[in-house]
Length: 553
Ligand code: TEU
Image (tube, helix red, strand yellow):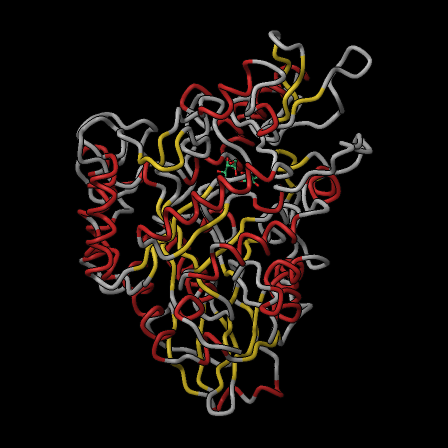
């Protein structure tokens, strides 16, 4: 496989609203990121993926863009952005922008025009449909609950919004829309950005007959079969690649609800010239029950491991994977896949770091995971901000659910778990802001914060640094082959990575108890320990709770 900077690079994802507030308004900003660039650089990462920073009414925290070419004034405006890009490049860091091209804000000029009349030149920039039998055009529901159609009384038609009603879906069928999009992408490339994370890119081509979904069936299948992977998706991506992306040395990663093993390679097969990488959600939606995210189920470890193995097998020698265990849309990875109990918090966070940094694919680290930030459990729904959380809550209220129980679900599943302010130190508001932040800090910041972990050589933070350095020095961990050794084991995840010169075995105990290692074939006695999350007395016959070992083989 061709070697490239974005395959070897390690990405650090920033949710700007929650990163660092320098203007004193309780909201993170771009100067706040600039202030922390040396910290980010000290992690050893190479690339920053910045969640949306464009002008936006923030109905979905920036994922509703009202001007694709200007930077939000709240975040510091275009001057701050230019300074950020310069300061990053000066430090050898690359910048990946988040582009939201499936939908715009309803406050975007295009939509405002589109609303005016049926013959407005911008009408066709969106999906307008007449009522069907006096009702919505079809039974699609939005990702954030309720119908995906909203009626506009002036022209008496409905427009499609797969997300909030302030996020109308753009009509990529219209060549003018595609031209506008190509120009926007080109604008940012010319400015010198190094790539794009493309929001819900799997949804941009619609099935134009808008078929009713076959309810009842589970939500996951609805996305795949009805909303995503539309008939012209690959044509659009190839066109975008040919006309703009291919002209620059940039990286692209498409976010892909509805993408799975059956269609994932089509997006990233190097011969097809579409995207470099995608984010699939096979491990992130793994605990969704038939009712979706707010109907979680228990998941055996073997199922989790299979996702990694199957995708590695699917992509190898043809495309390239994205390795991540959390982002701004999911619960904190240590609370979800590790154990955030005091006893195992640090050990399990380090184990997950070892997983992230020893897999084939590009590693993505979400802000705060490098110090093991955990889920939060606000006492009241009024403390929550996220549209998805509030949408689900209101549905549950309507259904008459037990709301005390539902609050527990919110604690477990809310996207706000990942959006609490970054925990910098033990000062007021965790050092994030001088005033009460837009979302309350997690009270555990007094124990979990950057400053105290800087001072502890065995902290999670310093473990990340160690793992990052090791991965960079041993490219076999980037490009080498992968094989899972123990597919069926429900406690241990053991896998090998190798090339013609080097070979490693990684042993991870995903449980709170001691586990015997019983793989005679591996001959572990003759291997040499490279890194572990326990300080001493490493055994090759047994792993302690959440123990992780990287061994030279
Ligand atoms: O997320 C798309 C997406 O798949 C999510 O709606 C996901 O299903 C949900 O968050 C899981 O809880 C992207 C962005 O990452 C998200 O922040 C935006 O809200 C969404 O698109 C709309 O732009």
